[in-house]
Image 1 (cartoon, helix red, strand yellow):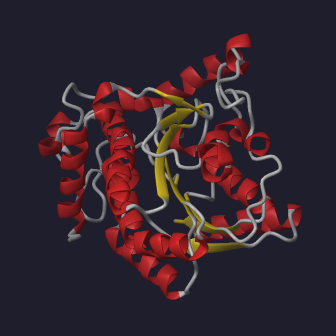
Image 2: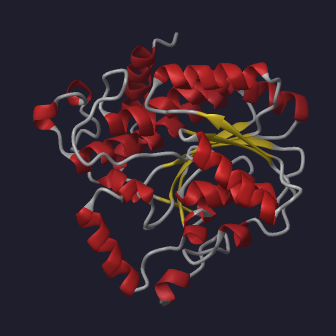
Length: 316
């Protein structure tokens, strides 16, 4: 459809693929972590980064699944530099273990892609007794980012190459309460709504990137942080939601949904494309800056979320 292929200021559109938006870019010498790289757009993100010479660390919950993806990528790209490490974002202990192991390897870190996500089909608590969507989609990534940030700062200063942090959010962030995030009822099962819980976690992804941008600019650190909507794609995150499956089926018939290759495009664009050098604290869709809801640009809400997340993760 014409509206689906209409190009924005970047020269790309909803129909652009991850390979197309990174064409001709040399990522040799760069190192990236991609969370949730064993399924969905995470696989394509890892593959395309590796295709451009980036050393990719696949941070996955299921090592066997991650290893299978790694082998498939190496079969296609024998020269790929790709490793698999275990990470369960719903467990703060697992996040700490991953970060400690990564930092102990002495590896640099140029690009952090916070891609993994869940959409719970009912109220569930994480291992740390936090609502599962919020724990996995936001809090795990918040802790991971903070624990790896010193590494990214060191890498940026030593290499004189801009670091990039990419948070995969969703258009679904729009379906939240008027106040944005109800901090006092995150774990309240009696007030739980699975759609709103997912929306709150996705709004948190945007607010996290925005507050991180403010802090990095204050420190004058050459690291950007942006968030994005990948598009409407059928991935494993939706495997339990019958309603969502039906909607996606209709959208596919109307040619309004994306392929995995198209769904990974904005992530790869933000990770590698020189067009976004120096751009930070923005929300993207179809490889172009777009506007999230007003709550996503609420600096006070972002600061409150940051402080709330610090308390839940026991970070100073």
